[in-house]
Amino acid sequence: MRLHGSKTAMMCVIALAATACSTGASGSGAEGQGAYVRNGTFTSTLSQDPGKLDPYHTVVAAANNLLSFAYDPLVTLDAKGNPIPGITTKWDVTPSSVTLTLRKGVTCSDGSAVTPSVVSKDLDYLKDPKASSPLLGIVLPGPDFTTKADDAAGTVTITTGKPDGLLLQSLAAFFVVCGRGTADPTALARTTSGSGPYKLTEAVPGDHYTLVRRDAYAWGPDGARIDVPGAPQKIVLKIVNNDTTAANLLTSGSLNGSIVNGPDRERLAGSMKEYRFEDGGTLAVFNQHPGHPGADPVVRKALTQALDRKQIADVLTDRQGKIGNTTMGVPPQICDDSGAAAGIPAFDQAAAATALDEAGWRKGSDGIRSKGGKRLELTAMYSSERPNASAGMELFSAAWQKLGVDVKVKSLNSAAFLKAVFQSDNWDVAPEINLATQLPSQSVSFFSGPGAPKGSNFAGIHNTAYEQLVSQAVQTPGRPGCQLWTEAEKALFARADVVPIAQRYVSYFGRGATFEISGEMPLPTSIRLRAN
Image (cartoon, rainbow, N blue to C red):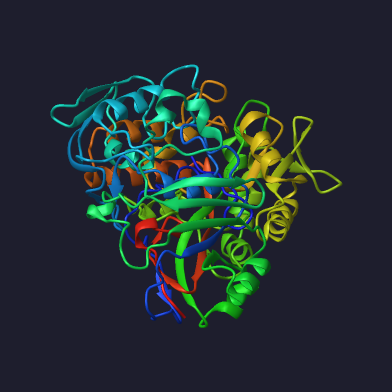
């Protein structure tokens, strides 16, 4: 699970960090074509301080962006979401198991070998009740799984207690911890212990993080090596949470790459290499726990019909995105679920008003609807750190007030927002949540099952049709199950359990280097520094 900071989307459920090629990014503009720079430094940005660097526990996008330089994913995916050789070279899949063959010769940053036993211990740690890892239920469907390591054969088998048709792809979100980190996970908070191409050597929280190249690294995607011309000796990741600052640093040559959006994007476009890619969709989610307006499906549908989603999407994305049609948003998307959008209630304010009238929600003299003496009130929470969030919230609020709803808006910083929505019941609607997943299976725990502290169903959603379709989809491995996943998502939209609002596009600019984009950062093994 990855939670985004202010520069990109606010919240995101696990974006697979393991894509081996450009994840749908389109590049344009100038780029350096000079001679390779030998043993240079590549400097990029993180939109917020990553905090704890423990791969078992972090859900912060900035942390996972940093960790992608120091750790290998258990499974590597290409730009279309297909598995390709990385530290895993072969895989055998059934609806309830995956057997992985590990590449020989993979070593940890401390020189120790990465074996099936190491991977097995890694995975088993997730289900340790003392670990309380947020990856459980996302990377793996739950604690009911077993692992079997065969070091002689070089294989590790994961068997789940219930079918999970996308288990292989889900494992791409799991960073392999090895060496000291396996023996003592508490040591991972401020250091790295992985088999990736770089190792963390300096951490200055709030300012920058430095990683140094591991010359022996030769097991990247499709056998990619790091001891090649132009590969950086150092990676420096600066904490920069302002687009204008990032643009200025790029222009001055102080950065080799950074995400830059909004008006600052326009002044950079054409002058340096630009990579454009999707980075998560904005969703409106209604609290359906007892006592909240969202517990009534008529109210949820009416509130959805009252929204001009196209207008809101234009505001939230600076007209650089599109209207939302999916819960997923970060490429590569294993399933094309855009057909699920047919289930979203259409914009129709008159129909919304009529539905509330017929359900007994009538306007009073003050213009606010009530039923049985209870006013129709909404507490809407959003993160003030998300780009254009306030302007977008104004449109949500205006649409619902016009319908006769008393809307109380609470603006919180990112940490407070996440705590309020996921750990409290003091909200009615979160209009700008970002669940940017690549796999529909990764959203199941958020849209069904128990809520906190036993589960992740923060909104208390109980959609029988969705749950039945999911139970069928998980028994169909790989892409053949995609149509079932699409129908499941459509069932969520039809009941206004989850409402797609906007799909954001992000620009990553680069200078003095060439690379491919993986997730929202350069793919480590693809970076080549060039002289200007």
